[in-house]
Length: 415
Image (cartoon, rainbow, N blue to C red; front, top):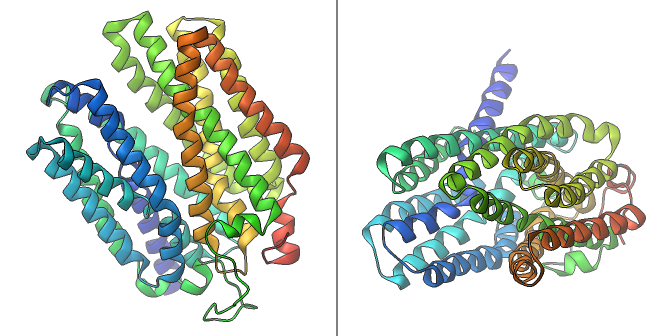
């Protein structure tokens, strides 16, 4: 009875952690641009530089954050420290106006935010173990998307009454709530040996001298390299689609552009919840490969459908497909990495290395799409992004092995 109650307590703590970290992991995002433009009267160029600085800081921090999580047995403390830094960055922003200080706060917040994804995955793996990891990861993602949807809804309602500054207080409040959720997880519930991808056949201290590190992890495992390329293709194709959609909606109806964008975000997040739950339940039954292939196929279809009409209802309907693709990716990404790094002790640094590459792909996506829009229009940009997803799908389908069976058979990193 006591064990059951403890398990339920830990499960609820993980639910709360993923719910409250939803907005904290992603940072201020477009809300920062709105605040700097409307409240601090910055020009668009300065806003773009600040957001680029934050994005670069987050990308650079991904791999070191994964390495730190792999080595640390104080994963809860790292998440708490990261949440504190995000909170301080949020509450300080309305009090400062200098470009250098604003850029510094956002760089710190983005770098600290890089801790959350690998830490949550590691803590989850350390608590539930490899057998229940798929189910629990799907549940994590479902609560994460629910948290995003709720936060977006609250931000939309409260910002209308109190202005864009309310978003900072909301994010800070969620960061504080995530700290309490983190501390509610018993420290002895986490097996730090399992949390870094080690197993019973690996030395408990993880001291294997032939283990690669950093980006070498990707280069020494061909399936992991193939998966990283497919992940970059996914992010390159996906990253620019929502901004381009927002611009199209604003051109159709300038007065409702922001409102329609909020509807897009909330609707997609709500679709992601059941999709993530389904992936968590079926990934060990259907396998990883066909599910991830569906994510790439849906992304390609989405890019092909946007150009068919400028009607807002059509565009919003197509945007719902984002919930399918992103819901699959969020739930499946840590599972594939865990499969391919089992027994190595490099689960989290591998996540960080792939996330770094994917982040670069996403950053290049908006630039490339913007250039295509200027030269050839929105339809050409969407079709180009769809083609990138299609190329990723073909490469993934023809070259990637099924990692679930591979992990069961080998339990180690291999070429």
